[in-house]
Length: 428
Figure (cartoon, rainbow, N blue to C red):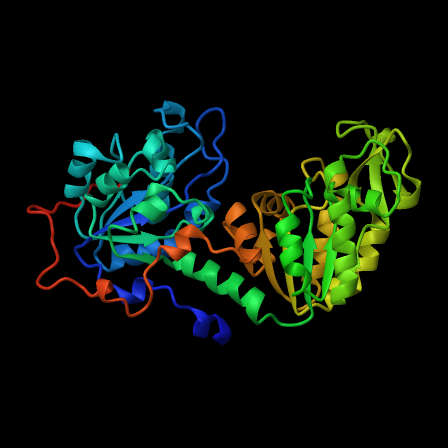
C-alpha cells in the first residue's frame, strides 16, 4: 500500500476491533451475474471479499454475511435466493456455509445463534425486504439485533444509503473490511498523490453517465483518452458527421464545454482518429470496415476505435505513471469490435504505470481478453467507483467509524459465544 494512502486513511478497519467470539455482521456485495439455470457466471465479487472472510474466521469471529442480489423490488423471488452464493463461498473457503430463509426475524436469529466462533452463515437476500432500499429504521434495527459489530466490505454498494449500509452503521460500531479499505486506499491515492503523468481512459456508451467523472478529472489528469460510443457525441461537438452512431444530442454542448475545459486546464485530450464501423452490431464480417472519423458513411455506426487511434495513443499510455480506465472502447462482446480495447490494454501494460480499472463492463471485456489479472487494481464498484472519482462522499463510507472512536473499544469481559458451539460439517 502506498505510504500516501496509508497516511490518508481515517476509517477504522479490522485492525481496530476485537472480533473473537463476537457476532460480526459482514456486509458484502455478492451481487454477481447468474445464468438462466441459477449458476454463477462470475464469482469475482465473492473472491474479492475472501481476505476479510478468512481473517474473521482465523480470529474466531462468528461471521454473519449480509448481501443483496439482483432487483427483487422488495418481494421474495426464489430465483434471487442466496443458496448459489453460499455454495460457491463454501467451495472457496473449504467449509460449510449454512443459509437462513430470511435475513431478519426468528429464523435469522436461530441461524446466527448456531454459528460458532470461526463459523460463517449467509442470510437471505436483503432486498427481499422493501425496508432495505428505503433505509427503514425498523428494518435496520432488526438487522442490528443480530450482531455486535458491523464490517462493511461492500464498496460496490457504498453509494447507496440503504439500511444495511447506513442504517445498520448508525446502530452498531461499523468498520471497513479489507476490500473496502483497499478500494479507499487505491482510489484515494489516485486522486490525491498519483504517479505522473496521470492518464485517464474513459469509454462506454453514454456520455451523460460520465459527465461528473470527466468534469472532476479535468483539473487532475495530465491526459484524457475518450472512446466507446460516447466518443460519437464528442465528434459531433467537433463538427463531424457520425452516420447512425449512438449519440446524445442533449449532451453535445456539454461535450464541447469539456473540450474547452481541457484546453483551459492544459489536459491533453485525445479523441479517436479512426473507427471501426458497420451497419449494425450484428452485421456480417464483410459489412465491417475501417474509416477516418471525418469520413464515416451515413449508413454506418461507430462500434470500436481503430488501429490508427491505438497507435496514436500508445506512446502516451506506455509512458504514463498512473492510468485509470473506466469503460470499454468498443462493443467488446463481439470479437470484431474488441480490438480497440485489446490494443489500449496492451499499450498500457507495455509500460510501468500503476493501473486502476473501474466498471463491470470493462472488467468483463478484459477478462474475456485474458488480460484482467495483469492490472494492479480492479475496482469492485460500478456506480460507487464513478461517484468516488467524481469527488462525492459515499454514504457507506461516511457511516464508518473513525480510528480512535471510543465506540470501537472491545466490550469488557469475555465475548459472547453459543452455549454449545458445534462446527458445521464440511460441504460434501
